[in-house]
Image (tube, rainbow, N blue to C red; front, side):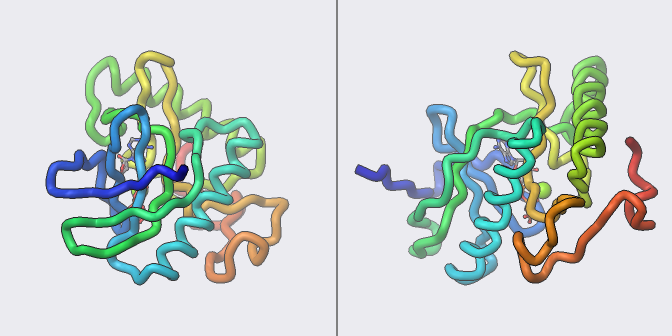
Length: 177
Ligand SMILES: Nc1ncnc2c1ncn2[C@@H]1O[C@H](COP(=O)(O)OP(=O)(O)OP(=O)(O)O)[C@@H](O)[C@H]1O
Ligand SMILES: [Mg+2]
C-alpha cells in the first residue's frame, strides 16, 4: 500500500527557496513541494528535477537518494499537491555553517564541483543553500538540480523551457571550480 503524506502546522520545514519548500517527514524522508503553482505545473517541474537528479547520480555526483513523486495533502490550504520524495539530509545547509565545519563542507563541495565539470554536468545555480553537509559521512550533497543541464544531452529531452548552459557560457565563468 502506498504511504500517504500530509503536512500540517507542525510538520518540520527543512528549507525554503525561491519556489520550493522542503519538509522533513521523519524516518529519514524529506519531500519537496512547489506551492505557488497548480498541480500539473508543479508536477512537471518536480519530474524534471527528478530526472536530472537521477542522471547526475548516475554520473557519480552526490545527491540525496530520490524515491520519486507522490501526492501530499496540505492541511494548511486543504490542497492536494505533488511531492518529490528524497532522503532527508538533515539541517546543515552550507549557507548556515561557519568555522571549521564550513571549511570541511566547502572542501567536499569543491571536489563535487570538479567532478560535475568532468562529467559534463552544468550546475547553473551553485548557491550555498543548494549544498547540504552530512557530517557523519564527511560529505557535501547537492540538492535542487532543476536548472542543471548536461553537455551531451539535448536539452529538449529533459525539458522544453530551460536554456542550455555550458562551461563556455559567460554566465558560467563567474563560478569557481
Ligand atoms: N533532501 C534534503 N534534505 C535536507 N534539506 C534539504 C533537502 N532538499 C532541500 N533541502 C533544503 O531545503 C532548501 C530548499 O530546497 P530547494 O533548494 O530544493 O528549493 P528551491 O531553491 O525553492 O527550489 P527551486 O530552485 O526549484 O525553486 C534547500 O536550500 C536546502 O536547505
Ligand atoms: Mg534551492
